[in-house]
Amino acid sequence: MPGQVSKLKIYAYSDARYSSSVGSYALQINPESFKHSHKNNYAKEKTTDTAGSTPKYVLPDPQTVSFNFHLDVTGVVDDEKNLTMLINGFKSIAYNFVGTIHSPNYLKLVWGNFYFKCRLTSLDIDYLLFNPSGSPLRAKLDVTFMQYQSPAELEALAKKSSPDLTHVRIVAPGDSLPLMCYRIYGDSRYYIQIAKFNRLNDFRNLQPGTRISFPPLEGK
Image (cartoon, rainbow, N blue to C red; front, side, top):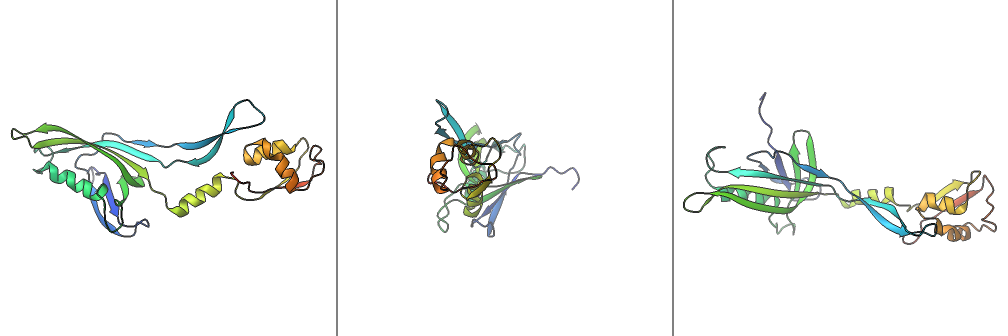
């Protein structure tokens, strides 16, 4: 309906292909904001050219989404009367161990145009209001979700971000073997190995137009 507020929904699946739906959970009150974190992973490698180390790109770490949302059974939001049932409903979808898959469910966060495949990694519950008998009436849930990537997706990322294929380069004027190694591997110290691999007798005087192969190296 026009003007209707879209609720953030969490869809749960029992398989990594996201083909078997096992339920969903709509937030009672949308979060005021959420944090979508991205982080690249670099390895520090010491080179023969400097006294320190240079960062070498490895892979992007899984993205994370974190936010907090409120549950309320005071009657202000709707007619819900049992806060424990609301919390347990969320936990059954996102947090609880499922014996048939030996883990919690696979999840999708959907809110407007935002879509995120993930698993829940943390849940903190703050109880904020109680009735005279001590039963909780309001709670704030702090949650963090980590991006889920299939083994095939991770393998594709690894191939794109590391020199795991043989590269062939043509020597250009001004090129040196250490410089070309740095361009391929991010480190110039492999030039002796590359010279041996290509059977270069005089690698210090590379001739422009020479074809040089740069194979995958152990540990790279």
